[in-house]
Image (cartoon, rainbow, N blue to C red; front, side, top):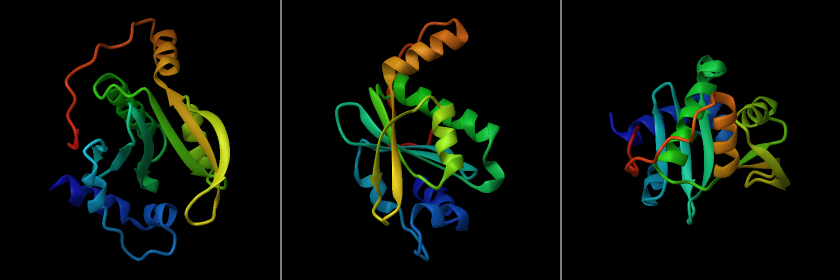
Length: 161
């Protein structure tokens, strides 16, 4: 399967589609791959999308079905964030979560994201915005493991990792 077919499969799962684009019957994510700075990490069980918007800054979207949420998803998202900071040299990752999506907000906090503001998304839903900066991530990684920050490896753009 291609990265696009995997992404379309996951994003069109009913519970994911309803959260990402309420009211839409089908989503085609082909345009995600138009930006060479965008990164998709995952597989048919769940995907983490990073939308690049320059200077090492990305937005994050984690797409996991109800069956794959919880501790396993937390591990997968942590690994994806590690890849972004170590292989793609991200300096900051931003997220925006509907205020009524308590599970997603809790996941963001568990990942180390810090609230930075409130807003409204394209569907009119009140949102909470978060950021995870590389320096904070590196400090928390070192604090939790006693290890130094992993060295960077060659980046692999727009590939299923």
